[in-house]
Length: 186
Length: 375
Image (tube, rainbow over all chains, first blue to last red; front, side, top):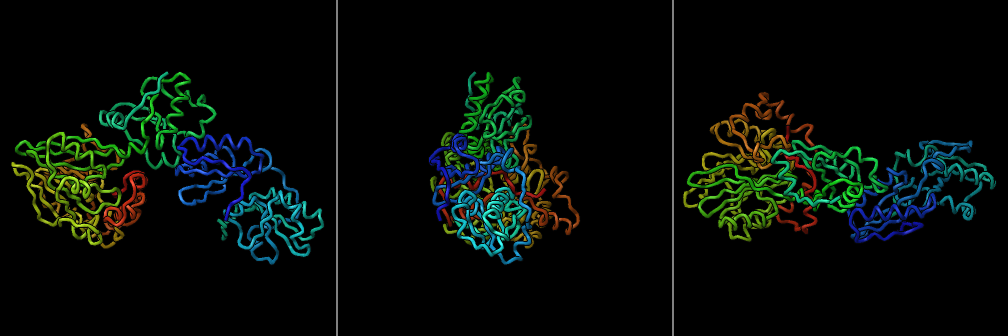
């Protein structure tokens, strides 16, 4: 499966430090929340990109290898704003609880994040597409909205409630605290 | 200011001569903590290069100006970038050409001592990886023991000294580094020996290295005699050279002893390891000079950069030779072992001739420190 990204960067054939130098520049052009795909052949780029992203506060989603090419995925974050934003949606549910409930787990993270690991059976509709794709959801079903930290899911749950969905819950703490089974689609 | 280019040989000189050096290691913190360039008088600062992309101003106060400063990374690219940034900021620094990769590969031949009739014993010290190879030289002939994979270092050395390589030995099937033994033998027409008990799965022809085998090197007939000493592997064999040096392979080191688990049979081989160390070696002359196939820490180096010590001194000082209780010994060498060497299973398969990776793949396999010992 092809992992979806907003912007692609070709760093194939470049030796360290160029993959990271170019990634840093490319990330400056991204809007917060967008995903960058970096194609590289330097094996060391995996550990370095993950560590760099961690240092500057971006989210390193993962790396998939196809032949000799490494495909890295990084989501642009701004720790000072969105990730720390207040969560206002009142109905919440814990990570553990959703496993014992019959409703739909709705994963509103970007497709790339979903591809690198999601709760088995979860449906993917990225936050940005939710308004347009809301009709895919059943109004009468319980819906547990999950993202990485509980922030995007808070916004998504609010949006769904406003649209008339009655049984919507924000899952906390979200995928960052997920210790159970994961499904990958790479 | 200028950016100097250092070779691994330049850094080796600093290590061996006990000189001061300040190393700015710009690799990932994990990589640095796992493995770095060790020197008696080296100081370190580890800041990953990707934290310095916006400038080096913040670390300038931490960089000394009263001694050599060397920037090091995995392959060299990042160290060049950071060295140039430091240079633009007015500092004189160097970078290590080829980075840790070249450091891992560098071999320094050092003479251990003289043998009877004008012969010599050389130790090839691989500082970055802790591997020690040996060349017994006598009157135009040589025997090589535990050669690492950089075969041209040995063949060039022999050519410069006008020596013919006659015998090539591996004390055991190595798990931590790729042997150069078979390739040297193929290139020079020498005989390649391997202990048959370690060689059950090898896919090439070899001469059996068995207890009591003696080969003569040169007209003055220096004996290289094999002594079966299992425990690290079931075939592990030591050598006594000229009645003077005991080449212990991976059974006995200066400050530690061999680990029995790298071929997957720790429990089975504990008794062998104990027998080799506490019975077979005990029966040898205490004045033999022990020359191991590895060192683990820089403190094991002698003044001249060699790694060797009198057997009697090791019986007095090496903790692994002084565990009276067999159960405590068993637990010491089977429990709480250090992590296994990088890619050790693949390395064993290379040494069996089952797979033939490219040079670059071999380099990747050998990355990291030596981990053959139990302390």
